Length: 220
Image 1 (spheres, one colour):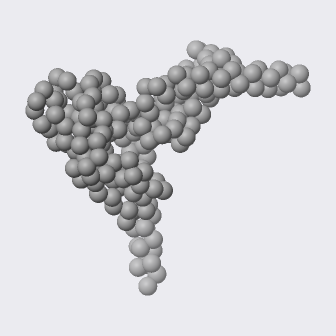
Image 2 (cartoon, rainbow, N blue to C red):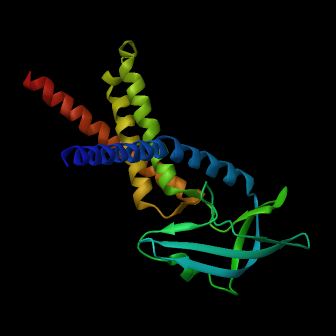
Image 3 (cartoon, rainbow, N blue to C red):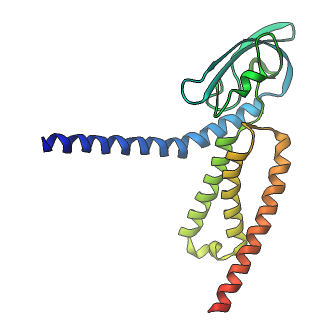
């Protein structure tokens, strides 16, 4: 009986480790890839027109609302149909935690602004902007990688400079804030607010860092 229990525990441990590895792999590679694809989608869509919502479906059996929307639109007298919602990898559907706001925003027969690629009008989307989670995580990941790289090269002396530390800390904090506090998709009009918030947070972190360094030297 004991060998059977040990074998089950071993399999359970391997399963947990595999899930952790897959999750870390998704965060470290999937999020930045999603961000890059979203940037490419944003680059592609350069025009907009009015479209018509033809179907809306919401699946909330998974603990969150999974919304799918179909719509039609016309460009140059030619009609197109699409189900692409936003930018990024999972652009055909949108997962919403704690509600189904998109189902309230889009309903069958309603009009909607469709953003499309004027060079290839069949490519379109409804929700314009960068996905907040992959954008925020990619920003934080870049800051962490930069910090680790600078720390491994001590001859750079970067980590000894309060300014570099302030930039690093500010980027990490800003990345997580963007991923949590901002809307589902970050519009270009949100970028000035992010820049101003980043600058303010940078100044605060720099002041705190200099004050802490001065206090530490006085204690020595």
